[in-house]
Image 1: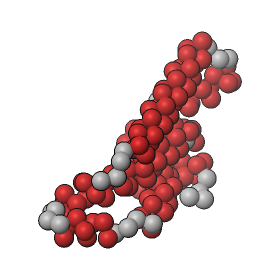
Image 2: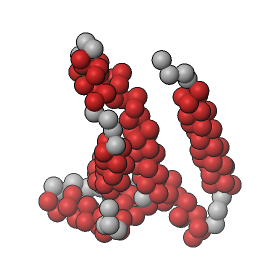
Image 3: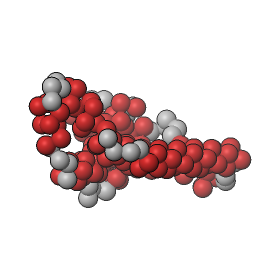
Amino acid sequence: MFVSEILLGISSMSLYYLVFELQGNMVTAIIANSVHCFSFCFLIMAALLYRYDWRMNEAAVVCGASPARAFYEVMLPLTWSGILGSLIVAFVLSLNGLDISFYLLGATPTMPSVAWGALRYGVKPELYALSSIINILVFAAITVLYFVARSDKKQPME
C-alpha cells in the first residue's frame, strides 16, 4: 500500500524481463495493477468482515439452508457494499495508474498515457469528449447507486 507506483512499475518490469524473460504486455500490466490494488481492497473487505455478524450464516444453516445457499442469500447481500466499494477503488486506482502501465506496456496506448501525452503536445478535442463521457458515466453510476441504496432502506423488515 505504501509502495510508489513508479517503484512498482520498474520492479515489475525488471522481474518480468530478467526472471521470466517476458516483454511487457497487457497480462503483465494486469498482474501489476492487481498487486497494487490488492491491499486497498483487502482493507475494505477486512473492515466489512470485522463487523459482520457471523451468527446470520449459522442461523440460515440451522433453518435448513445449505452452506452455499447461506452464502448466496445471506452473506453476499450483506457484504455487497464492500465488494462494490473494492471494485470501484480498484478501477479508479488502475485507471489512474499511469506509472505502472507506462513501464509495463511500453508503446501500447492507454487512456492515462494518451492524456499525459496530450499535456505535452496539445490537447485534442477527442480527449475532451472522452473525459466528458467518463464524467457522464461516473455521474450515472453514482445516481444508480444512490437510488439502489435508497430503495434498500425503504423495504419493510419481515
